[in-house]
Length: 56
Image (cartoon, rainbow, N blue to C red; front, top):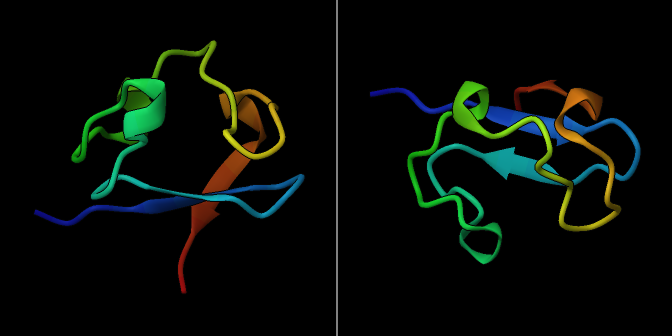
């Protein structure tokens, strides 16, 4: 299974589907499309719509 990463266009925080965001209640393996729309970037507080696909 391939996991993707998404980057916050404001602060550069990377959401990694493989790691999830346990501090926000998103367990590892949570797909970006399955994150609630009201989820906020843990670093700067913007909403999910400010993230874009990221490849390193």
